[in-house]
Image (tube, rainbow, N blue to C red; front, side, top):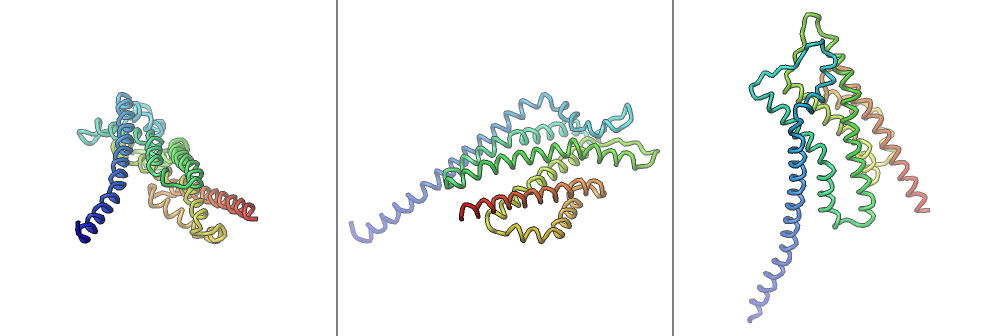
Length: 258
């Protein structure tokens, strides 16, 4: 074999060896994604028989405030089927979040250091718990106040007849908004932990943070002061919790360094 042929052979061998790990990672990623999708489908199939009951549970905060005999309406032909179907699918994804995150963790964990693994697990668990807490806060604390405000401030001669699809889109938006808002302590903690900023710097920016919280509340909630405040105030309090966690980690690192 000539020198040029041998060199070309070595180059091809190196390319094949470098492509092999990539293919293995893609196969592993596909496998993890398929497991997550299967988990969602299994939960969805188990819940679909109760789709109407699930919708009735989500609609309860509004229906409890309406006069006796009131009901929702469907302005589209397929809404009586699609609205509970969509809600059940969202609930299935919501319940399957731990499984999805576990699959994501199993995929990325082999590439992490032991210290990163020790930190990542509590952060993942905390993120899921905080998202669930945000959705629960929206359902049990925000919805009753919000719907009471909406139903009592309108003209007396107006009958509230909410479309089931519009109502679903409204509450899902609020569930998502409060779930994401409750992730603020994790985001603040990670910013401090990564060194992207400091606790002192974030503390000096409190006035801007308060303004940003109300701007986000204005964008993610209906255009009224009540719902905006119900989102903005918890966001700011959660921001302060993130600063507190950042201080704890900073002091612990200072003690370990000394």
